Amino acid sequence: MINKECKNNGRQMRHRRLRKKIVGTNERPRLSVYKSLNSFYVQIINDEIGNTLVSASTMESEIKSQISNGSNKKSAELVGKKIAERALENGIKTVVFDRGGYKYHGTIKVLADAAREGGLEF
Image 1 (cartoon, rainbow, N blue to C red):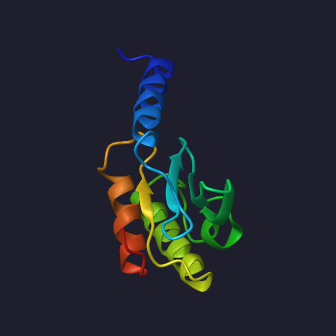
Image 2 (cartoon, rainbow, N blue to C red):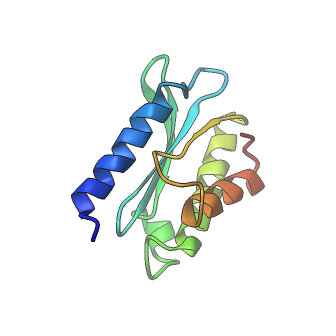
Image 3 (spheres, rainbow, N blue to C red):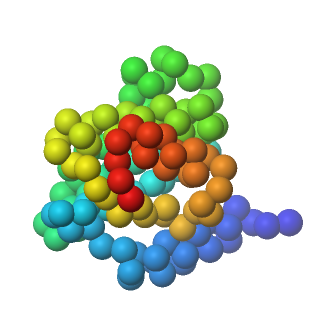
């Protein structure tokens, strides 16, 4: 049986390895994904100045009212659409996708596809 702490340590190691290669700039900020057991958190970050430009999560009241579980594919899709909408409002069209050490599969893939459908390019 896999210990939850060990599983998260592996994800963090993969994320550190990915972050060596992925850097958000002013022209192409980084779309960072974090998921917990109960929620999704997505941010668009400019690493040059260290600022979060746009964020969205399942903890927001407008998204939380539409879902029953904050960590399934439906909630990932809603968060992906919301982050794309907010990014386009702020003039952000292209981003670098930082999957946070998670496999590009399941809910992470649904979130990325929803952000692409919303108008983001990565």
